[in-house]
Image (cartoon, rainbow, N blue to C red; front, side, top):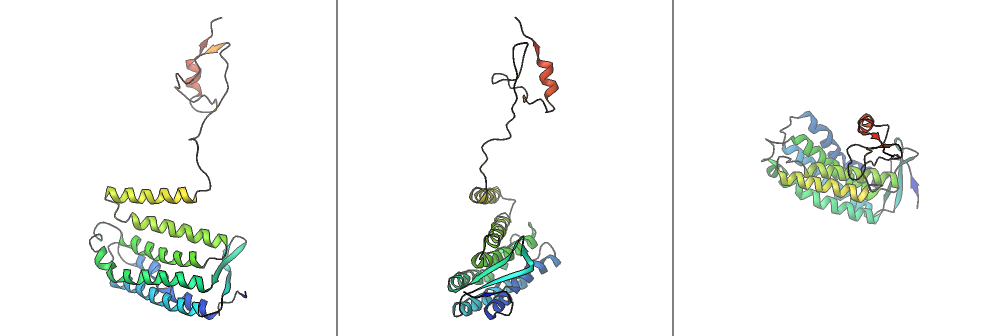
Length: 236
């Protein structure tokens, strides 16, 4: 499989051009007020979807190749790597076909929320979600995939939590972020910061124990003086 680090690859250039409306949406929406619900934002979503569908068709008909972006598009010791092939084209087409119709009803659907939420957050999160989904499909190395996946997950959380006044919405957002944590966390917590120490009742009694856990037993904590004040000489 040829490796191409130049940006002159025709399918890649078309793909980059197709997602420019979503990039523009994520940036331009912040120049408007918090109640913004312009038709322009949905037009940008639709233009990106149409462009992505065309790019997917061209990519499907083109030979598979790898595109590696170097500095400043760098992730530690590796560059952002994108795998362009027929399978990626299929999933890009799915994203395009799903996001295109969404652009038609978004302004009317979100009109009832504009008085209560910051619509700039909604439109920017939507653009980031679409861009990150594209990057997840194309990712050819682990750092690229993981970063794209995290952006996709967090932008999904923001979208779910848009109408945060409603308890049901807050619960749904909490469920979303908990699912992200459970599925992606590199560790599983088993305790909540246990403290430990050793003591002897040979000469002094009154230490914290299971029957009277009045303070942590660890001597370096601020409750150490409280432990000392509870002590009394042991009876022989």
